[in-house]
Image (cartoon, rainbow, N blue to C red):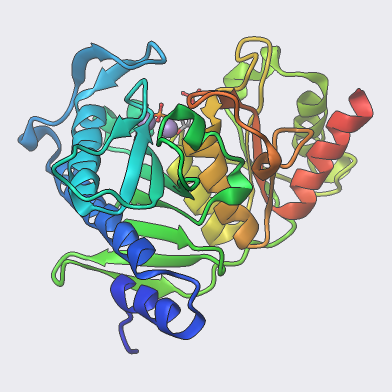
Length: 332
Ligand code: AHG
Ligand code: MN
Ligand code: MN
């Protein structure tokens, strides 16, 4: 089989469909290169001195791991030099990072979760990077306000998983494509040209330890799944929870399923971040034929009010997400 690299895929989109500009293509390649660097650092594990805490806290008051800091630095350094951004924002930085004047300034805004699944770093379980690309509105300063666009405005989104292999899942609004890092060639090679999500599933992902805090629609949905064959759903369900959103969503891309981190009485606004976790994943899931809501609204329609705001997330198999969303409306 002919090997198609990420670069070839993007150049062909640029040539044939005109849906990727040269600048967007180069920006995605800069992000992908940074992900290769991070993958390399991650793979060193205990030998690379990259495990453990950094002794600092991020803006959300969460203890930063060394790899959170390293991944953020790698992505910032690569992208500010790259020349395609007006500014970038990250889970690890309180405010948008402006591009130093010594570098050219581009037309895009990049949002990122440099290292997703931090609690899995030290236990050798898959972690990853999530990113979202917006266009900077013309003639405005690339400040926090410029970033506050609904997810439907994204021009590209993707995530990398640093697992047994390193994969990159990408959408530029023309379906979802998956690449695997060929470590010998140093290139991302296409391994799935058109990821599609089945509308139904028998597998759910949720952190069950939050059960006592859930709202009634989530309790109802999970109770019905747990009731199995003899319950209202008439089938047995399986459960998975990696606790790295990248790995849980990748599994859903590979074999279907529904992922939920709903808001509850402890996470009153939700646990995951709208702009660099929920939005890019929702864009990808919808492009693969799935759905994503916060229980009531389509995630991509939400107008953000703050860079680091949180949101309830229900995404994956379309019919299941619609069912959970219906349960929320019925409970109102
Ligand atoms: P991050 O490491 O970027 O803070 O994100 C972790 C997120 C997400 O990846 C995962 O689904 C969830 O937090 C895990 O939460 P629990 O620890 O509650 O399982
Ligand atoms: Mn995360
Ligand atoms: Mn993170």
